[in-house]
Image (cartoon, chains in turn blue, yellow):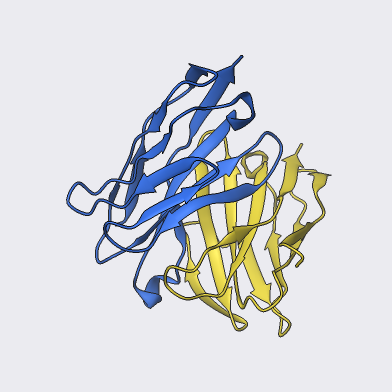
Length: 115
Length: 113
């Protein structure tokens, strides 16, 4: 079945450092890919998405490119801020209507940015 | 426009009791799905409803059930609560097409004692 694997955390970075969180997936067909962020005590917020190969999703300085050849959707940000400290989830949604478009999540990567 | 609204936000129940959680989707969204989040298992899909019909179901026991009303609002019920049911229950809504964004509510924190 479909699955998402993302790098284990926690990741600790200094402010203004470069961030990469790796995400790879296994899926049939052409899934849509998402990054969600969860701040302490809150629900999930969509960070960015890509719906087809070579699409680049971007938001708030974060970027991720849908790479079908490597089945990857790595999250990057050039300069992180303390306010980026959160848990980041990579997820996919199948392209088959029979699957009901449920999200399949990775385990999450905790990011801590220190001043 | 208003986001996904979940009630109650926090609740404490005793083992063996049952609980009902409520979710109001974003206006115009017809798909509502539910997820359970725990530290050990992460985020797991419970079920999805579209136009009052359950379209997809995750791998959870029959104690977990849900329904959707004609106005797209949804409820989920957990009967005979177990300690392991303590979790954050997240509701999400979408327009229900492939690639459409799924928006989440703040969640309902359930503690079973």
